[in-house]
Image (cartoon, rainbow, N blue to C red):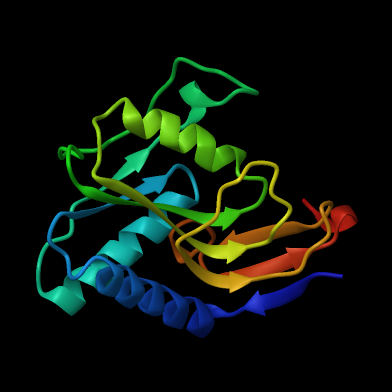
Length: 175
C-alpha cells in the first residue's frame, strides 16, 4: 500500500529548511554553488538555489550534472550536464532527491571532478532511506525514512508530475 510521507507543504518547508541550513553551514552564500543531479535532483536544486537567493538577496549559481557517463553499471557517451560557472575553489552543494545505496552520489562526485576542483562538496537530499553500500552520507537531509531495501520512494515534483509529494511504495506497487 502506498503511503504519502510528505505532502506539498512538507516539501516546501523541508526545502526552506535545507536552504537555511546550507547557508548557515557555509557562513552565507559567498562561494556557494548548487548542482543538481539529473533527473530528479535538478528541479530540487533549482528550488533550493531560489530559496537561498531569496534569503541572501544574492544570486546563487546553479547547474545540472549528468552522471550517466560516470556510472559503473550503465555507461553512455551522452552528457546533458550544464554547469555555466566555474566550480574551482567553490563550496559545491550537490543535490539529489533521495539517497539510497550511495552509488549515484559516487558517480556524481566522479562526474563533478571533471569540471574542476571545488573547495568542498556537500550533499543535500530530501529523503535519506538508508541501506548504504558505500560510506556516503548527506550533509543536509530533509527526512530520514526507515524502508525495506525493496521499497520505492517516489518524489513527485510539480516540474515533472504536476504535484509535490513524497510517496513510499512497497516493491509490488512500483509502476
